[in-house]
Length: 68
Image (cartoon, rainbow, N blue to C red; front, side, top):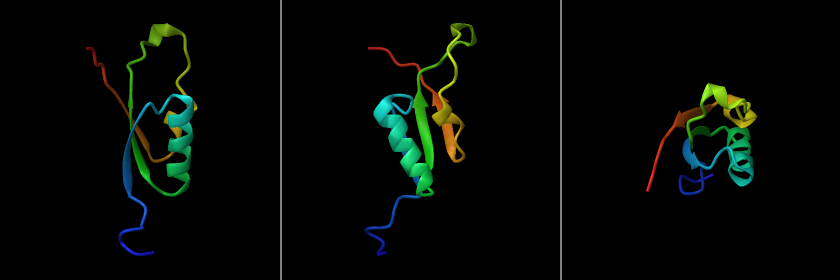
């Protein structure tokens, strides 16, 4: 592999908890890429489980609150 075709060693993914973003994160992790996932904050009281993709090795989730 040349430097121009080598995979990135890290990636930033928004929408990592969605269908497409989650699949992207899974693939990146399989390829050895460290992933930083920007996610919306989830209150503990929401009763919704944490998406499994955020527990994969090499994934760091950062909760970001953004408004218009």
